[in-house]
Length: 284
Image 1 (cartoon, helix red, strand yellow):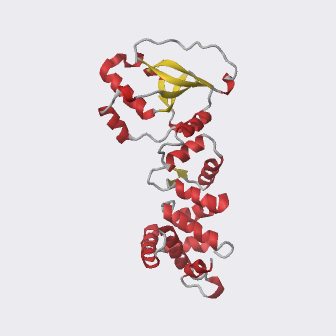
Image 2 (cartoon, rainbow, N blue to C red):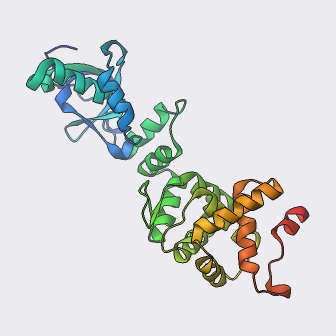
Image 3 (cartoon, rainbow, N blue to C red):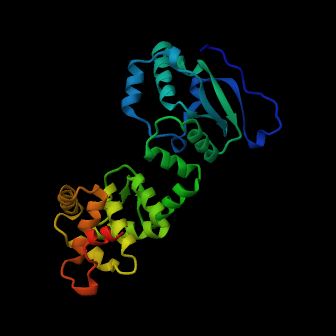
């Protein structure tokens, strides 16, 4: 890193309109992080790098030059550590110091997100981060799932408050099981039963398994009412599911499906009842 910089006056090259890259030098003060094209920032990891920063281990940052700004595509935590270190070393002049970067040109934010996913294909990345960046990159499945979630008046968000869904792995599971139609029915059922709460992974999967198996037989309005009236709501369903899991040795999402089936069947006789989940499980 040095305290000199070279203005970016590169000539236009063939293929620039479709994105190109080269090693260049930029000021630290010119770096920005696009939250839509990155994994969620980890405060814990950021604090660790602040206290244990090693300049020799920074490596090459990957950035995208767009709208006059150098957006960090790969290396947001290293950038955080580098800037924290520079502030300690150089005080108010930290923004003038420079660093070499691998700079991509003429990329949209969508293309930046796709580039992030490509860089992190072999690295550990959470399902939540991969999903949200996939939405920004306009990938087909995450985008369609997000459309269904928003259409239900919900949002993909880690916040533990009504209307928020963070279990993206469960959303993807349901989508693969029955496409957007099943996902919409599942989200609407949970939303209406528990006032926009209860979106835990196994609950989402369990409700979807029931609706998918008994398609054409299950009365969705009754399902909502029965779940809504069940003691302790989603927590009560989970408690019953754990009992079933222990007695049948099943996976927790399947135990949820069995519990939900029992709750639905209570008070029904004959053809109106869905019958035992385990009877159909054996038949399948």
